Length: 435
Image (cartoon, rainbow, N blue to C red; front, side, top):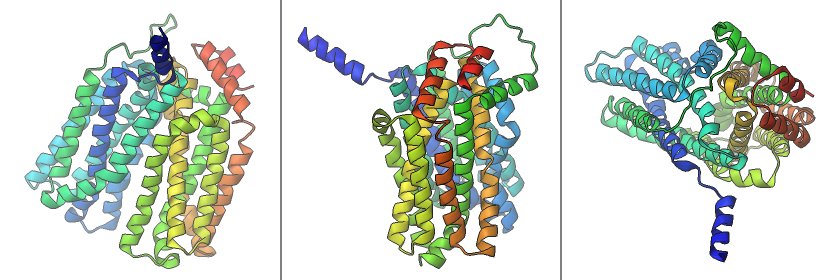
């Protein structure tokens, strides 16, 4: 009897995430490794096809464009459809695109226009898969800590595949054969599709007695309106936009900082970049234990402040070792926040409009990115190279402190309580969440 009690206690303390989550996890591992391989191979292929820097840059940037064009309607469509089927179809579409691209490379029919078109189509598939996967996660796991652990494992898989292991493998495969990286990515999406196919359960929104003849535009507006009325989620999206602005500004000038201020060569610059991924990888594993010790509101404020101090430190130091430590700290803090805040978003967004809320939140958070590089370049050219880093670091600290009332532990606990007790996005729920 004592043994049974102890076993029960252990299971309660650390419950399994279930076979459905394991399938989603394997799918994330496979597709992340494929994405990392492609991340290195696509620009390598581009420079084989053209010497025009504008076209080469377009190949790298085109994958993010679909988020700005299709992010909101994609969220509404994900809420209309069975999310498992959306994930499956996105995988199969991406598998088909990459198979055709592999054949084009093998037969010397690849050109820069084809690469740009393929990058855009793959970006569209990424949107539908990512939104659906985020919306499905709270269904395949239950409990706040389990959701954080699930997000932690998914994040670790993505960082390892897309930033650490995938790119160097992509470079090696490309050196062996230009078609191998794209064939490998195609197979990764096929593996993901097989995992998604085997998911058990119903992943469509439950039937409703409300009219279903609303237009897509109305449904998009409903999700965006709900997000903007929710004080916690609205503030999280806004602070993420500032974070992305500062992050993009930092990354756009990092190569100049590395060479002019830190005295690093090409290899040193590569190591400086990889230190961010190392910190992020460690942070993804430690996010679950951290969430048990520190409440979300405190974590968000402290995390943004630490990031701000680290960016500030980058602008002030001339030591490559300190700069590497600052980059690792930024990666660690960002990873912890992405996991824990991501789980909070999933819990607070009602099932019926979860796709729309998550896509709107993602779109708002991305809005700061296009302006970061422009503002950083302007500040650096009119003042000094240090200025964008110092200004960005101070901005993050100020935003972290300013957002504390809306993201206090008490405010988040209230919002979580209302989300737990309300199952539909009614006016009453919206009013309660905005108090």
